[in-house]
Length: 173
Image (spheres, one colour):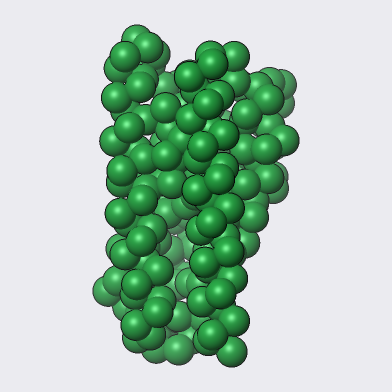
């Protein structure tokens, strides 16, 4: 569903532990909204990087994030429609959106190498958080088998994003 959640969660480059810690076990409609929101967040961050980044490696990484997360969100929307599920806004998705807005504003104040470094470091942290949330919270809480399968596939994709971000970060040092 969202597990090409590149966007939904892979993006979660702006997540922090508290944002994903919501009271009680999330429902499938809430999980769907969290995943989609995470994807949109990473797409927006990557689009900012495409405008501001100086490093060709950072720009290439950002292009990958836009491509992967848009594809995943498209598939997630198709799955939600197929399953007749309405994604449900929740405290976690609202917190993610607020944190992402704050992070984009902070990154917007940076330029050149300082922006590149901060963006990539944020992507590493975001993917670590999202991957952990997928593994420990979202996948175990998902009750629909198709959603769970997509999340598991998404986790693999996002782990690849995390490794890619770490590689780019190491090259910037």
